[in-house]
Image (cartoon, rainbow, N blue to C red; front, side, top):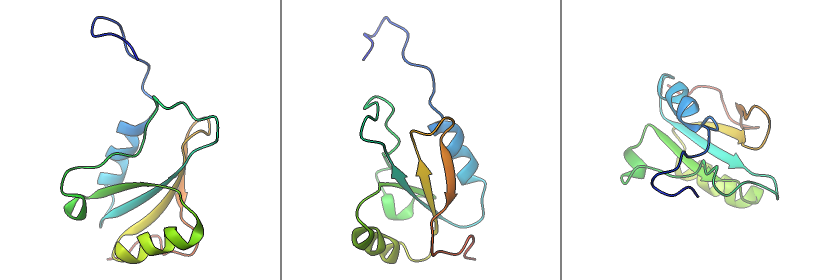
Length: 102
């Protein structure tokens, strides 16, 4: 991590992806999948303090059962899978969910 007087790393795309998702109708849930060699300083998963009221919620990919629990909790959201370590990062509809829920 850079010191306060050093230049930080280049953007890895989270801010642009957040902006893109905020423009979509409805609320969004993004399940983020990392590779084992993921750069820990390129963190995608962090949320506003009021997660349930956020337009976009970010979560780490877990096993299918845990992912399904999360999806059921946020059942009124559009669900996406973000392959964070692809170049560029790849955002696709999460398998088994509708693209939009209005």
